[in-house]
Image (cartoon, rainbow, N blue to C red; front, side, top):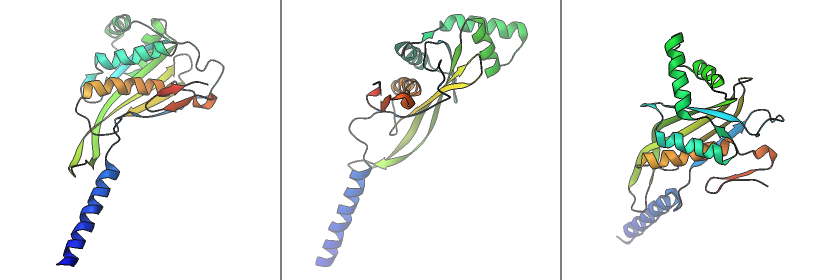
Length: 207
């Protein structure tokens, strides 16, 4: 009987340790990664962007995500061409030339409205593998991801990429997508190769 009690205590202790080890931290910040193309003289300088977004499940990216992306681009020193102007020219161009809904058409229209770069934004939803909370309940759900690609309209080269995802399963998708959009653009524009540092909670810090 005593031996069984000891075994039970050991088992409970092991479960508690496992639960604590896999419980997410109190401060939840996006997990962000980034990469850059060749760091030539024009890299990181002021650019004129148009922004084009796609949600893998519902079509157009939400206005909140587009707003977060544009605000972040402007905060790090770029110009964003008015979204309504881009859509107007895009729709007219497609109507006249019967082009389909593709990247090539977006690039063509971007040049027509005076941009030198385009930022492609993609939002996605996937399954999160889950974790045990403090009450030993298994929590699983949706993982949100926002990916951005900054493309030079002159050369077609990728200037930079950024990706940000939720650290835990989430319910408030709209609020998280806005945070992820800001993190993806911020991480993509953070020049680690030139001495910048990135923190998932604090963002990009320049020397």
